[in-house]
Image (cartoon, rainbow, N blue to C red; front, side):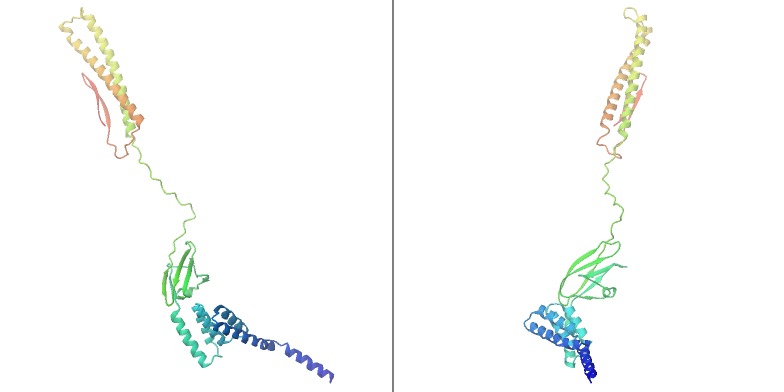
Length: 315
């Protein structure tokens, strides 16, 4: 008899501590949390009501509590979350006919008010798109994405592309399209520095002309010196053949020859001086102000005639 009493006590102890009874004892807490939520809702304390309903659902997944939570989410402007709660409540078989009809009407009204964003992505896009902090799946990107009214941030990333970031403002019932424009990242190789505008090359023609002028100058001086010596020699011959500075008719050709030699010598020295002077000036200036391709042809050419020497050219 004593053993039976002990056994009964042990069995009773097991029943009290069984998980089923613990859950049953927790049910009144879920009901209390639901009541707290309803009380806060009547006082329009939406955040407090939301917290109480969520606590109640953790303890007991009641579709009626979900419908009330959906109403609070709607008041807070969280239309997407409100619709999600209603859809989950409608999946429950515990809803009465009246509750189900009310939830369906409420969901239908909400879905008309929820704004959406459609994304136009670059061809062959293989990156990621985030709406605020939530990464969108490939399936979501292929259809309008529901979002709550208000300001949102869209970010997109793809390999080899510059990150994309854009802010967008949504109002109820908006149906917006967003073109995600992405540009390629610059190559890892250092970018070439912008080519500096090259200064026009100065023509080398002036230097060439300078050397030509110097050459003419040297030739002129040489001719002047040579003809000067010849003129001096001819004068000596005339002095030897003419008495007291008086020459006969037979010495006229020799006199004319000496005069011509003297004139050529003088002209040679003049041409030489001009050539050397022009050549020196051209070398010092280097043809400044003359752009290659625009410098006209220039040349200096010496000449020697039977009775004169000179230089002609184009500048």
